[in-house]
Amino acid sequence: MAFDSHDDLFALYVEFLVEGTAPMRRVAVWELGRLGDPRGAEHLMRAITEDPDWECRHYAIMALANVGGPQEAERLQELVTCGYLSADGQDPPGPLPEGLREHLAQDMERTAQCCAGGVPRPTTARDEHGEWWRRGPGRQESGVRSQKPEERQ
Figure (tube, rainbow, N blue to C red):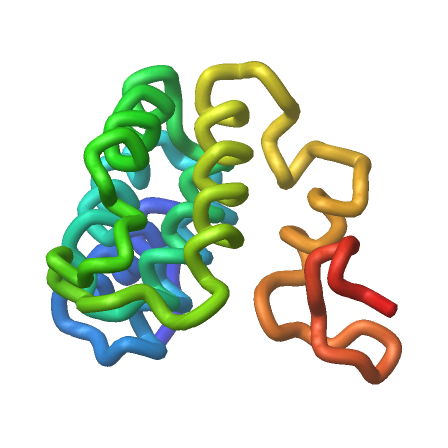
């Protein structure tokens, strides 16, 4: 199947968000961020708040840093304030996996800063965070599973 345009890819990723398996949805949110199309922001916010898979939500948070604006920055801050990362598991995906809460909080803060224009978007940042983002989650680096810079030994 050939895709003739950016719009075709955009439509495919949005379709994956609605009809795809969890791994397909993870790819879809990541690629929506890589496309850099602001239209993706509403779909990413929906994934952040409604997807039943925490890993997909996490990828959507990261991807939003490339396409979101001030509205998304405010919405992320509201989510944190309203207990989005609470331990009680009241959100549809249930309790957060052990150790993910702090990591998500940091990523949500960074994404909100990007959306508000306070720091460069990951695709343009020339720091280690930008390099990690451009490689993508789980991609290999020198034979070691990709990690955030502070987690590398």
